[in-house]
Image (tube, rainbow, N blue to C red; front, side):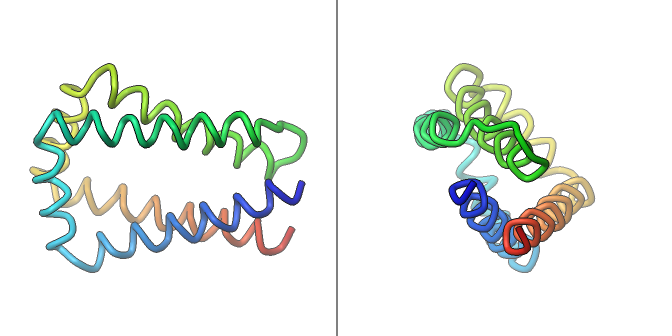
Length: 127
């Protein structure tokens, strides 16, 4: 359970920091969209996400409490995110282009990520 609590704290704080950085600095969003226009970058980030996701899934695949279910789902989401980047980079580029054109949609997903990060971190720190 300590690993689950640590991962909830870590992933929650990470989500808050990253989403806040992209919400508060338009330059970060612009740079990210530029990076996501190259298949090579998508493939490399896919490898990184897949390695991290696989490690997280294998080390923390518990489904016994609400917190462990949330953390396990996040771990699986990271792995799936990496696999999608590896096998379908064109889809990732297409999604990035749609987000680039819609500031409201980009802001919505960043705020959602921020709120989820706050909730997950809170659950981890109060467990």
